[in-house]
Amino acid sequence: MAKKTMDVVKGLDLQRYMGRWYEIASFPSRFQPKNGENTRATYTLRDDGTVNVLNETWSDGKKSSIEGTAYKADPSSEEAKLKVKFYVPPFLPIIPVVGDYWVLFIDEDYQYALIGQPSRNYLWILSRQPRLDDEIYNQLVQRAKDEEYDVSKLHKTPQSETPPEGEEGPKDTKGIWWFKSLLGK
Image (cartoon, rainbow, N blue to C red):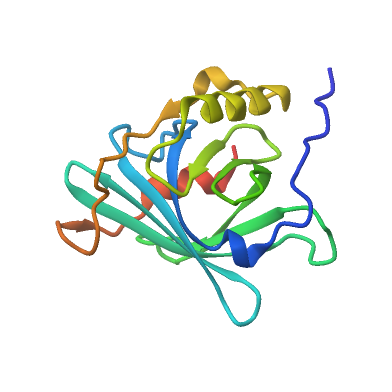
């Protein structure tokens, strides 16, 4: 049976979308530590209209991070279908890995969002705060279900009451954990 066409946000205000988002839940991936905590993304608009992406997670007390670039797949389209490109260390040659980032839903205040991909193998629930109201969470899960995602795979990401700031703690800069968002397979 053919999958339904996925509904994607139209007219996303990139400027309002910028800033920090906390990962409330996601589909687990073999590329991300199962014990990743306090996972977050920070988006910054560049002068050329592309977005700088910084993804961070903590695992066993170590911070892992990777930076990349997001841009609209089709600049003339109203749909919030972005591509995200990372140059992935530590592999040589360093090759760009590109994945899809589709904003399936965002509330009118830009406080929480549902992110998916055309493959439906990856899903994220993001929030401006490390906590998300259960009722809102359940609404987002239902929305994903309506888009034919297998929501039984959703795994809640542990977030501290006080998310870690700054550069404290040893760092793992390999960035392998962030592959989950890229390969889309």
